[in-house]
Length: 300
Image 1 (cartoon, rainbow, N blue to C red):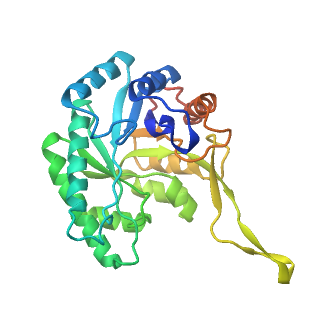
Image 2 (image 1 turned 120 degrees about the vertical axis):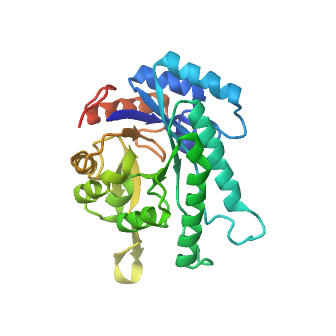
């Protein structure tokens, strides 16, 4: 397995310190990461800000730093804009995926990440499912000539359960469509970590880890002099190994299922200890220690 650091962690979001793309790549190398995952939007690898020339320069910078690009991460929601049928929102996102794929190819990377869709009250689930399948098929077809694999990450509502995700993957039916299956979602939703990961491993080319603590929520009821549940737990990101997620069991399941791909770490929400560079670096180094590789390639 190859440890990978996701640039979203140093993008200045959620109060984190911000590094530009070249500085991030150098920083990841200095931390001991042999590979990076690049965020396909501003302030990093935006389709508005890069050209073939700047991509070639970025590829040269990666080589000089001794870092490979494991994945270019797109941000899609194929249900977006469904209320405005006259606007080609899906076509825009397919073109976005195609552009990111050209960037990936120029960076020597063979993987582009997409999400599925969020649920909508104005779009029946079956229609949303069909819209998502059609969109991802077209994305796959648009990037196939570039030798790019499209990776579906299990974060959005449509097909978020592993059983549904496998059904979606089989219905898409494209050889260059694989999974980027993460522990965060099934662990929070209560799927068994080891068994789920082992089942999904044969279809998975990349996984991304983070750790979270669950913070139960309650609302006071004065008439009862008691509390009632206020809904799902609040979760907060913590250094790897300090949280409540069954990440170790998930990783063992992936390994036992035959997975030997890239393993990324992300800090993409408010983080215990704050968003200063020192804390980000501490957490990034902790992940390498947790993974057991200290930045070197691991064998499962």
